[in-house]
Length: 414
Image (cartoon, rainbow, N blue to C red; front, side, top):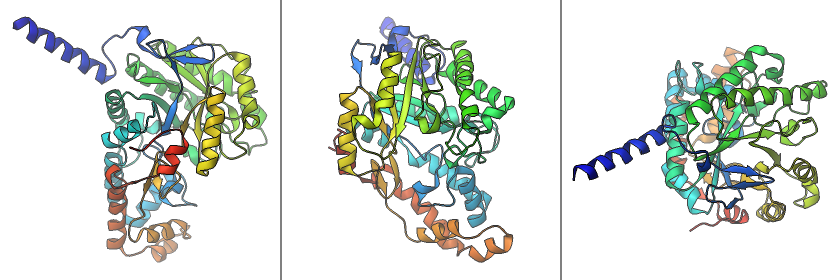
């Protein structure tokens, strides 16, 4: 009897260590590996990625709330503070994070037949910078730990995607930046970028639920006159961050995104500088044919490493079904963007709450002066209720499954 109790305690300890993401050593054979242009599971089977992105949860984007001009995390937070004050805004963000993605959401995603979730996050979640209602120490590890535990229970892999990096890697709203990819001009930002990834990799080095690390999302927008100069700095920075990751973690795959919306792979000259690399492309719009992604296929075949479509979507069900077939025929796995947002074109649609149009109107109103803010601000009671109702409507059980969208990805709704 004592031996049985001891074994149970030991199993519980090992499970606890594994779920913490830090302590228990795990064999390298427990992780997804790269084999030529394929991903191979620990059981020796080929893994073809199918899934979605948990966008907007840990990196808010305006259009998913129905905002247009107020389109980045900083802008949204500032607008909410002008609208309802900083204290209510902080409480909103905390409740938003608690409810926007929960175990129920992960269970729903798994029920569709998906096998992978890409988790976009803001670098500030792993710093002491103010972000989404918190000051001082952020809750990044706690939030990611929750997703990992839920995904473990539902046989899903997780890709960690640093969507917003220090200084900004893109120069547009999607990285919550200041209108330029300052990361590539700043040693301070580059060092912080490396330090955060090293910290994440050290913490999760023994976590096989994590498929890999997507180092930075869509670096270097195509708007800049010095784009070629910026592109030339991309591969050296990737090498630098991979080097510090390998100081603590030799288990996980590292994902390299192309320049200009993850679409340009020409800047990469040393494509096999690490033995656990895969490349990741993005595509929105265009014809859903092989010809539309021939540059991705050619690059993949030339380096004989996996290529994965980290983002695609926002189109008709017919277009998405055709593009999924194209990707399946050409061995490019995919995670569609996004899982959840206001209205449709996602896995789960959030119904617009009553009086939310007042929030959207304020978000688009001129607010360059305090006078303009005062004149545009609607009645507080209506706005605060609308914000709380948005959180309530965003809970998994209150969302509207977009059946056609999900089926177009080769998945199902039970």
